[in-house]
Length: 121
Image (cartoon, rainbow, N blue to C red; front, side, top):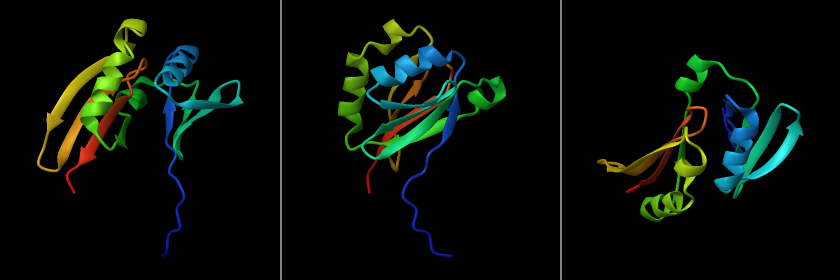
């Protein structure tokens, strides 16, 4: 089978939809409202769907890996946004170094775990 994929767009939920919408806009994503309970957030040709839906087991097991060019610079930009001040539920974890590359972590206001990383390859 030959794939000619153009994008992959995960669906994530939100405990507080309006708060999460604001959070992702502050993080730098552009929002496209698709309905009263769903938006598409995008940046540079990639994106995800945010739903006004919350199932704790689903959210607690949702992880997204976003590859970035320079995780050090990305970490500094994350810190400069003061997201943990504006959004009390947000948690940031500093850069960790592995054999394959480096990554830092962020839990969004609902608990979705984001990995921001770069590969050594």
